[in-house]
Image 1 (spheres, rainbow, N blue to C red):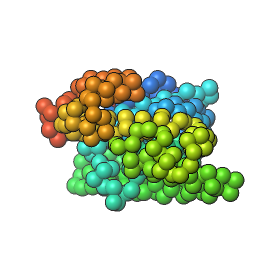
Image 2: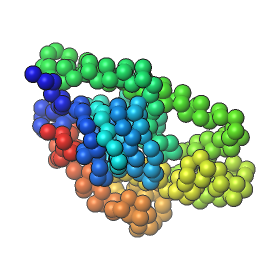
Image 3: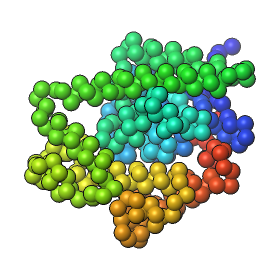
Length: 308
């Protein structure tokens, strides 16, 4: 008897997916825009594909680890056969924010708009991650004592190793001698936006803060992030707005104020322009309001493609 291609753990209270590992042999699962209500980790074993994520596009090949936060839009477009494994886990099963001190993956593997969501693996590293997934699969089907705790332990190991590799690769890229001075400014810009995006919305503010001309800073942003300074700022604001709408009961007016908008209606227009949907509709579709009838349960009501 051949091994199953999908291993699924559901929330016993709601019946919705909590944790899943499955294999794929083409891009049919991901060849249209995804906004999945789970953390999604794709381990590409064979083939090359073009990844469309958020506002950017990049290439991924064998030995690529692709990581996406809940409701982060992404899509794979391949001109050749691809093969790999995919892991989904819901924040009710494992919340990276609560375990940040242990796994340190928030802002490294997930929720980082400044870098491609890819970790490049050697063959040895790829084999190690595949072995970890193989260790998890039988645990998903067990009902023994401490099943959840053991799965979470495996997941922590997976994320910690991925975070270490991502940090190492990012550090090496920043130390490339050809771009060292500009790379440092790019890093300062990234850190400044992360610190001040709620209060500073203008590119000129960041140029003044970093003591460079707006023209020079704009060129550096384009070189290292392939985006304008405004796009970097707006994307960070939009991500935080989605997080507040998704995880909190704050009103749209309160969120607008937190993010530095004096006018609630201007914020709503800003959000719709950058998220293609109004704040209220986003909340009703994926956010806190949708979860209120069943506090503590899985927030989604739909499975990702191929979840069954």
